[in-house]
Length: 289
Length: 271
Image 1 (tube, each protein chain N blue to C red):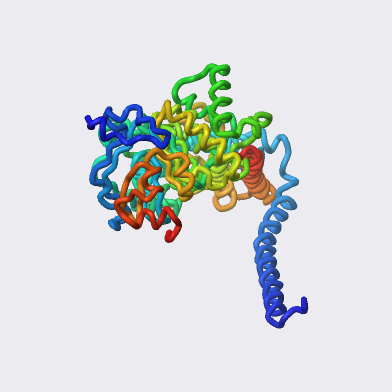
Image 2: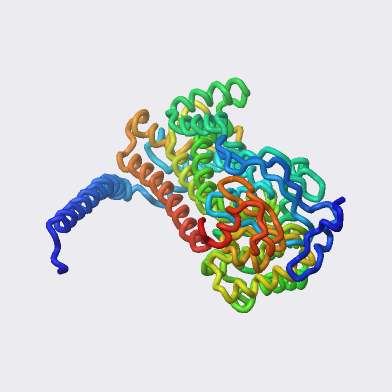
């Protein structure tokens, strides 16, 4: 009575082993992140100062700060967001809530998922061809942001669609049975219960955009612009491209500056992820089931 | 027009009030299939105005499919195909281009209750708001009346703000009933409405349904043959996708049947 059988003991040992393996994998995942962040803080930290953040570079980038790149990145990301979020969310709503489940819809869904896997350099070349040359926008914030938007669209659509589909079908049917139209159902039941997921997906996507270099390289980012952008038709510096330039093209840049730029870039991304997590925690508290 | 002399009588001897008029629901040659496999075949029946029409039959006999077809719920399920004709108030339901308007006039309650992720109050006020009722006082009145009729008011009146989806199973079921009533439907479809409700409360709801008969028409699917006997004016017996027979409830229970399988089922010899 109540004595463990050999089978019990074997299951228990296996369970301990599984736990240990998963734990080690998690450590293996965290260590590189800690090393990267640690290195950046130690070697780039001393470069950070108000002057570094709020003045333009001087003397062939060997002195001065990163202000134009910082401001440029904000512009690029915001404009890209304005372009991709309305289109992406609307498309996801159509695909998830309206489109009939047929071969065409499934093909489109598959295509979108595949589109998310297209390398960013391909998007960059598409951006040059479509926005810079064909639409004659020229290398500018607008062209670069649109390129970023095209690149992020599939991920926005997929993230939105998944949040929408996490809302149980029974809720929709209950609404429809009361005579609510699809749109009334979306507005009153589906969106309020999926908005946290949608926003999280969008913000995570933004943070990815911040770090992208290839798509903006040929479409609107410049190695050095002394002034801050005034409209979406200006070229601009950007953090990611600035880092790339300092690390590979410029000469005589103090190592500390390069690490400092990398540190600021990663801080922006982490800050945005933190916002997204805070958002999710807040909205999950509001969740209704 | 039907010969009034042929009008069946209710158990208490009263005639069906509007039997001479056109039936509210006329079903002809109805076939329902899922992915090409028929679940219900060649159903012909009428539901008269202001009657409670019972449907009994063992599991998998097509009762629920029948209810879903009445509300055009086949639109929610690509696997479900409906052929034949269903006319409500003389109009084929497929001729309603605005299917939402059709559904808003039909209340449905299914055995697995779904409390919407809204407060209890908003669950019941949902449909009135869709109809454009905005005034708080008016909404309060509808919510209280419907919750009272569904025998839920006393239990939730102090927590109308809590989430409908957090109520217990039986309470959610009554919430669903209240929600269906809040539509002020002309036709009420009930599928096992009492499955998670205790017997005393069930009786209270049954009383309400009997009262409602003067205002609306009710189609009641139930596994409890005694519930059909208590409530239904006429009852249809479904068996493995076929309508075996339809008759005045009391006649069927007294053995005045056309098909002996009906008596067998009603007396619990199979099912």
